[in-house]
Length: 598
Image 1: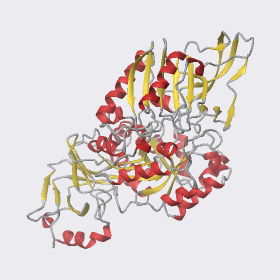
Image 2 (image 1 turned 90 degrees about the horizontal axis):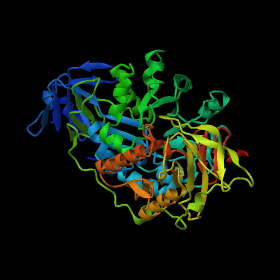
Image 3 (image 1 turned 60 degrees about the vertical axis):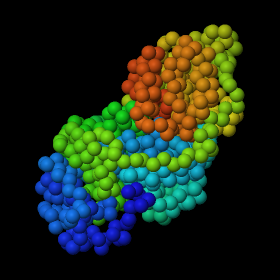
């Protein structure tokens, strides 16, 4: 069963009624379970009957639903909880295709995902979004797609491979798997009434679908209120309790994320656990999870258990990643609970605090047992146009990474991007750097960063400085995952290694590589749009793990520093970023000079 083949509730209502009444037999019955009812926050000794991929009967005794062909699952005292929903995430951040992402997360109990493929939209435009949509519809679980809203994320501050237009949004709203508009990252555009942003949100509203939010600013004054007035219905960029409270007070849903590098649940969930706010408007999500996190640590089960460890009542935490999510997207009658007519997504677990996943049922069929996938996740035939996307004009040399000082200068005061561990925002720093042979040199913890244009083969390279990684010795790391424009980001202490790393990614068609002392120490190939691999998650995770080890050997001690690397060009999150047009002051949404004074 897949979303493509799942019959609608009205199409099978007559059969569901007959089964619930005892006139027909269910396909599957679960007996002996303690059913978690997220509508009432009760644990009930009930039984469950399933047919056509949907719940037919949920009540005290399902014996009247059992026929000679019915599969009976004896839960033997296990808890039966709804399948987990990820309310906001990006498949591409896992370095995996939708099929391989599903294969990785289904055994962890994730049965529904709401994904915004704005990464591939920046590289391939609307055709790329359609490819993601079509593969998502093939999977044995529910993967809903939000139509990306902002490519580029900040017009005038970056150049993408393709742009998304209001006409694109209007077209996509008619696709069967599109659930709404992806995160509206251009919050200054909304605040200032940009016609393009308003047109995209209007097209979504006319389709009766949800507008995703992204307000990455600490300003909770008139600008925040203006943004909410524009229509975004949720936001995942909050980092503290005040952010969460401000959003729900305005009728938004506060999406609290725990990804590979974002730890924003603990600082916000106190709005519920200590302030006592109504939990119905709080939702858990991941945003960005790398393959290594998915394979080794989990997915939404990891977020759920973290919320419980932060003091949240398990049933409240369960609501935050099931029924609250479904309700937000207008799907309360379709998924998110164990109730008649809904998609039959169930987890059997022995403990609500630690959530070991013993069996996962999605769309009515068992899809995972004791951590092992037991179904296929079908692959799309990705075309060559999606695999040939690293369009550099030429191989680069050391000279492409030189930063010239003003004539006669012995040192220079420059703006430096400051990485903040476990958070998406950066700091705008100022550093006095030495000048040698007319070139500004990084020193100590301050090394070079370069953005290499890779969409239109312009040959452009923008150079600047970054601090916080802790690298030492001659090294460089390059990645074609560079949110959101996805050019190529190169960070290094040595220009020769920077050139080697950039040229290697041109050779393999995209990915991530680390060079040290002139030798390649790690490589993760990402041939699809320079963002994803169609290899199994375990293989990608192993290569990503080798990359992390190479980063540590090069002196980096940050948690999941690759995620920090990949966001250095994200020109919609303060304070300082790099783009193909120059250094961007995101507090002002304008380009700024690298050199402050000499």
